[in-house]
Every structure is written in C-alpha cells, then in structure tokens.
Length: 144
Picture 1 (tube, rainbow, N blue to C red):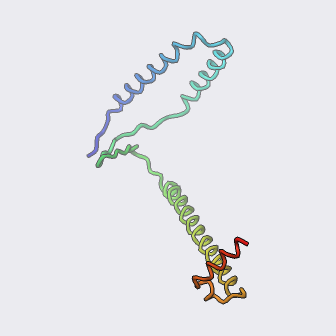
Picture 2 (picture 1 turned 60 degrees about the horizontal axis):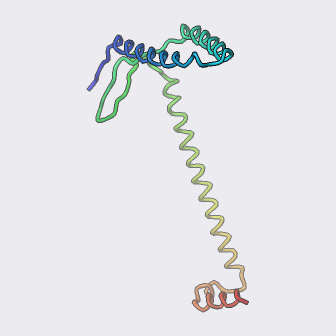
Picture 3 (picture 1 turned 45 degrees about the horizontal axis):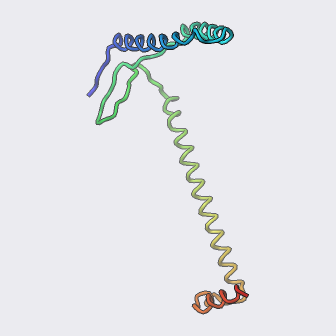
C-alpha cells in the first residue's frame, strides 16, 4: 500500500510547527541578558543567510508495509557511489569479524598447546592427573 501525501499539506504542517516553536522561544527572550540576545541575533542572521543556500527535498511518497513505513524521495538515483557506500562498510564489518575469529582461534590453539607442553614435560606422567588420589595429594600439600 502506497500513500502519497500532498506537498502543500506537509508544508502547511511544517509551517505550523515552526511558528509554534518560534512563539515559545519568543516568549522567553525578554528575560535574556543583552549580550546573549546579540549573539542569538547574529546566529539568527547567519542561519537565515544559509537557509537560502540549503534546499531540503521532501518525501514524495510513504510506503507502508506490515507495520513499517519508508519514505521515498522520488527522482534520486545514487548510482555507483550509493551502492559502494552501502557495500564497503558491510565488507569492512565482515573482514573485521573474520579477523577477530581467526585471532581468537589462534590464541585458543596456543593456550591448548602450552597446556599440552606443560603436561608432557612435567615429571609426572599424564595418567597421574586423572587419578582421584592425586587431587587429594595436592590438597594435602597445599595446606602444608
């Protein structure tokens, strides 16, 4: 289901919201010190100068499907750069995750190899560690 909103209705709503915000901000300007008022006036003039430069593109249609809505700004085709802009971060993420997996696997393998080296180079045979009496022997020696 595609719902197209009239640009005039959208503009009227935006104007109404803007006027409401401006009215609330104007109500409290009488209490501000003079230096702050002058800085705000300067910032307002700069913003008005930039407003003429920046053109916002409004959505031409709203697509509603199964509880989610998307806005379409008709006539925009990003082309190759838009596609690369979406794919490159995804590739970087996948490469990072693969690198993390390889590094963790290598660390785990090294840790297991270190334990094996310690077991095999120890004075005790590996079967001694599986003996239930050995754990008791270790606990007695720890107390001493």
